[in-house]
Length: 105
Length: 116
Image (cartoon, rainbow over all chains, first blue to last red; front, side, top):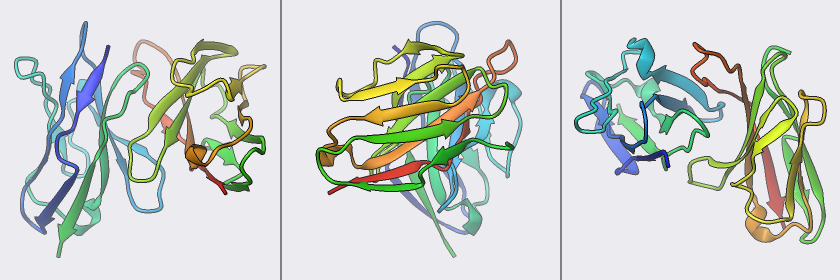
């Protein structure tokens, strides 16, 4: 079964501080992972996927097979980053419970 | 249309009523997913279609839940004899499915069901 775990429900950070959202996975086969984001009153949308190895809105995520992790990072949080973030594997996209990020001005 | 369209956006039902929720995916998208998102929770998988075939319905919580996609485009999620625990936002998402598609989902705005 493809599972992801996001251990922290709520993360509060000050504007300009680094933010890291943890995601660990248990996966049979080659993992393929995504981060989705849901801003207030907006649709759930793709933030980034590990195969593209790109930075979106300053966020990056590296797949670490040794640690079975796909943590999401941003060096300097902005107020507009306040949202719910979900880690998900490919397939049925069994979403984790999500991280609520609150950026304090 | 340009995106995934869901209707109705809001539905209030009395306990025991049947409801039907509609999803119009992006034209040409092969895969269609339904999720249930309770307040404060992440989306929970309900069912998945590839074209008209329902390949996975393991997430449907009971036999009161039924989904169809008869022509491989529009899908309907039907809930019979609604219960209060069915109150949630029901999300529909669609995607292409190809070697490079990587199962990126485009979500609708959701249908918020409140069962009184």
